[in-house]
Length: 109
Length: 274
Image (cartoon, rainbow over all chains, first blue to last red):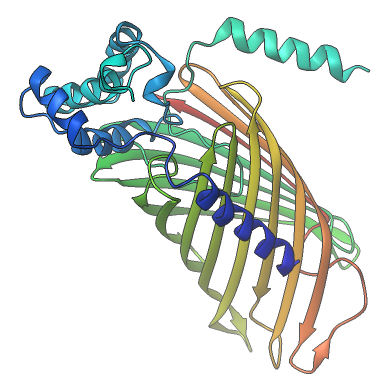
């Protein structure tokens, strides 16, 4: 019985390591500079945290690469009000999602 | 054969009814908790029903809880519960029954996120108060979602003060519970998950001279479904193995522990965002 619990815990921790930590992207300095040209005073590293804190409470976090910039602006408009987010946090999240969106090829390797 | 049309019906209904699903702090398991907390200002009402069936003789327990949950911001959420517990059992050749009403207050703090961080981590504390019992409970919650697979693990400790009678006088004794819960579930669609839950429940109840430890291991399937403003989860967990020990050694050689635990537990959660 205890072995089963150990197995499950090992599976969870092993999966976490296997998945290389995170399923959503982290911004580097190039992303930050690019985003600040479009959204002044927005930092994508902070935006990523706001996205996780506000959105994962209701549903699994989606990778920004699942949708285009246009799709994100429509989807996020539906969600932001329900998540009771203030304007600055909403802009941060949309900046993060659009920066890593499917059709933002500017920052792709 | 009948299951195939049923699965098809669920999938069709799923696609027809739901855009991107639930607007509540959706749970995908019934016993196992996940690390997510409600965002600031969001509320949810959760109705719990747990059925516990048969010990050595006839036994039926029904635990119902109504939980009002709200997000405080800063990765913190709190809840208030109204608890009603009823049980019926054989005593001196007749069916006896008992009911307990109480309330609980829960606090949950998310330390790490299940998707954004290496592993999701939350700390949980709950206090429950009833006329004959005060209970304190703590949990460490770990979870991780990788693509369509969600895995979660909880370590739970409970310490209760139970008041009964001894030689005609009120007497309070302690009860301790340790629990390890785990689950793995797969997102068949964004709104429908199917998986398994396992639960190791170890109880040290009061009233056993020299101490007694009663352990039971439950395992079974769990399903969850989320609509636009609601979600539901259900599990059916038969006891798979159990053991009982007194201070001097193992009590009996039965495969299951049916003094303090039931043969089967089933739980249904239904929640609404408002």
